[in-house]
Image (cartoon, rainbow, N blue to C red; front, side):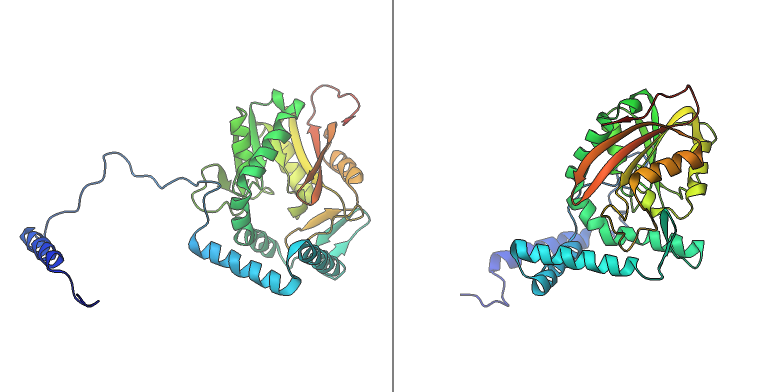
Length: 308
């Protein structure tokens, strides 16, 4: 019998032999060379498994929710109700400036706005990885069913986060790239950038896509930048949530919300000079109701908007 602290004789001999071999190696021997060719950083992999710390935080968060709200459908219902109540209470404070048709979050400066919006990824990245495949399929459906988009050759995606919508467009054969204030690490589909200040040349983009107009600080500035980079006859495709009078209440990171969707669509058309080509109900994705609106810059006279 051997105690825990003792090694078997065979193991001792193998270890001694290995030490003797190591001692024969010159101290200056270089480490094995990597394969020839440039060494590049591993690309971002969407949908990758979360690391141990992310899984641990997820487990702790679930345990805290169970302790607070209980388990089963009743617990989930209590959690949703508490979240809605907290959102409504925050929306009814001085944090938000309410106008006739829009509500805007108050920021002390543009720098504060940028810092706040950039911090969102750290709060939601784990969830984006968990829901990647479902989100990718949803984006593919939205784009494949968007008939006007078929005329575009390239698409610029605004506030694209980890780039799930960019990958969906790639799957459908489009040349597409995204920008975001915080695209995360090793993201090969999304560039770091601010959609209020696009770096792309005038008239070079066939279509611009955005599902984050509720994160805009200056709508006039954003629409001006979209108009600038779009070619004549180019498309602006916007996926819009319902307004605050229609049941949607902004959370911790939304910076703007509209009273109702129909009025906001007309607001965009009026401020930008774009024609409304199509308004399409996308149905519910998770708990939110979405509609897709296609606007056209200049070009031939458009017929009356199609609503489906």
